[in-house]
Length: 110
Image (cartoon, rainbow, N blue to C red; front, side, top):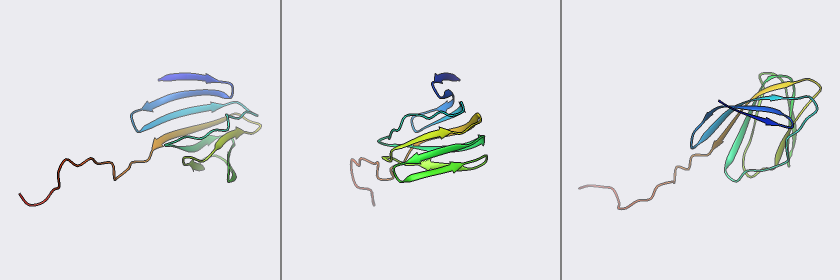
């Protein structure tokens, strides 16, 4: 498990592969991450404890325990915390492209 310290708290990476990343975030009160976007990565935020505000270019949503929200690319977004420490699970994933196939020939009868 990789532990990363940020100004807003800490991120503990629980899982990572080519398509996804699962992290446990322990967020300090009255903090926010940078306002940013991703080209292909979605972010799923699930609140375990505390309050999380997720702001996007389209507005914001306040989340409490057992609530979740997903931000899809290329939407700008940031998260903010309230007056108490906040614990969340963040799952980052890329969308599977069913058209991702490079055919060398056409299938059919032999």
